[in-house]
Length: 317
Image (cartoon, rainbow, N blue to C red):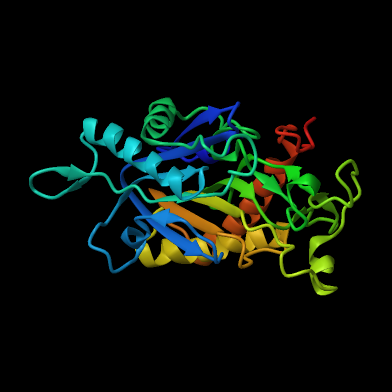
């Protein structure tokens, strides 16, 4: 299993700054992919999302960019546009081809260096590195500075990162996911309900608080850490229109809800993109059900592959 790149035509590239603990991840999807998005969080940072609306004139999406750096990281998308423009890829306006590159950011300024963020050069680097090889997971790309369980701040949080997975439906339709997990809440194993990574009882402890339970019992107003966001991308080789691919994005978001608790809070900028790239016929609901399942798998892989960094412990050591 290669993850998102199991879908023919999808290329993934990471650019990683292991010292500043930030980075970006670029998903290139050719010239005729159809895109959609589902926005669930209340602290989002994004660009060109409206191009994914069924009513928008642009029929296709050419890349999606996930970046660290908070709003500063939106600059990485301009680097991807430059690379695609040089390749002659984009929406034909008659006088130029304009690449359609939606992007979204997560907040990683509280780990590593707050004054170093992904920019145009890093976006170009990730786009040029994009390939159909197995997706690198853990502390790479947009997941380099990702953390989870921040209800009591970074001292009791745990490291997370990038996760990716794929599966095949009985009809031969493939669905795959890539996710950068940077949640306020804890990551839960949906098989048994146990917390895998999340807020710990003390800085040196590996005992978990259970963030949702702590919220129910009441928190000081200043307690929630205001810097989170889980960003996901679903891809399928099923041929879907814009309405259908937006529905798949919405159904896929249920996979995040199954594995992160609490989720979609006022302090999270959670967002799920979806890409249809292929010619296979499929029932949109079946694709959506599979998308939720594979996204849940990717979330679990993101924390299991994460290594300790910036004084924040990870499950991979």
